[in-house]
Amino acid sequence: MREPEPTPADQWSRWETEPDVPGYWPGLGAEHHTGGFEIDRRGVKAVAGKLVDAAIDVSKFAHLHHAGPFVYGEMHWALPRELGRQLGYATTTVAHFWADLHAEIGMAGLLIERACTRYDLADKPKLGDIPLGRLDDRLVGMIPGDAPSSVLPALSTLYPNGGISLELPGSIDYGVGNMTAARVKEDLTALPYGDGSGPGPYDQMPESLVELANKLMGRAQDLRDAPWYGEAADMAQTALRQIYANATALAALTAGLNTATLRFEQVAHWCRENFQRLADPDRGGWDEFWDLGGTADSRTGSFLAKANEELFDVYRLMPKRIKQDLPGLMVTDESLAEFRLRVRNVETRPKDSEWLADNDRGWLETHRPVLRGQELAEETYG
Image 1 (cartoon, rainbow, N blue to C red):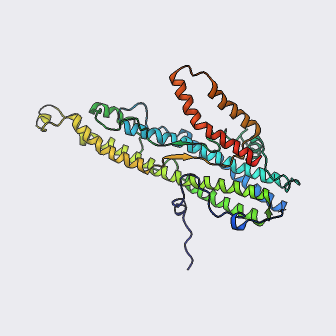
Image 2 (cartoon, helix red, strand yellow):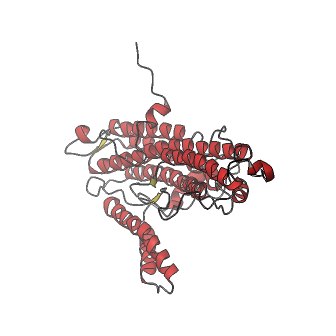
Image 3 (cartoon, rainbow, N blue to C red):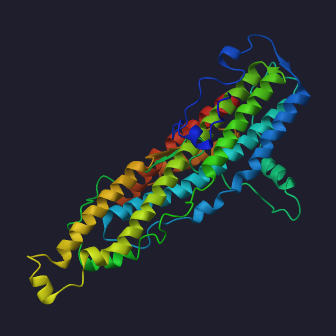
């Protein structure tokens, strides 16, 4: 009897939420072809075209840019306020990650396609670079009917190897000692209005990414079997393996974020539905006198302590970091020079206030590693 095919959930549950290149990859490692150079130009070009085709989904989840915030306005209750902000940051960052990933796949296809036309590939194996506008034009041309003038969004500021933390700020007191019944009544209106029964903001994204990862592995096998081997082929396969690691990480990440987001909505819904009954904030007079010292605020504190326990469980469900580690195939000489100048300007501009100094320090902590990633990509791929 044949083993059942693994489901998408079976696959993403085994993957890490940060890019981790697989030990096995077609054409590399034990399958590496030592010495010589060979390329079936027609076969390799056909595979490259399929990689470009995969980039057409670059804007499929653009709605995530507008999925947050998960809390509205300012809240006195610290834990759901900060947790909702982190979940909101996550949706925007995931949308950028998805777009960067798909554009990188499309660029890999263009670079491999161009390699098929080069007769100096054995001597000059670096893939080089192609302006991003060329990929955009190609994708626009693939859309039937009244196509938009552009498909590709701008590359994110995390490309190719940046990340953001989803850790709760450590400097904030997440206790509820400052909370009153009146404040909770205000704060409940700022919580998300869903009840956690819907599909969630990342619905279908993990499944799409599992399918994409499986296709990437298949395209790599096709390149190996075309055949194509030599230093340029090794470079292309290494890039595809790294892209695959990002697809698997994003699948696992979005599955975890979807679970956490839906649970956050469930807890918020429970709070709205049960605060009046359990905290009884409007009880007063003789009813409160006979309550053995209980007050609306003390009952509110007990209610929020229970809610905080549930919210910390949501936090434990969340991935704590979103991290890209793409090969950087879209880095060009021009874009690298521009980004290098941008970093240099932030490093050298006058720090006229403590706020500006702190802001620039944080920006540089995030973007200096990205600059190093871009420089490494240019050095590796040319």
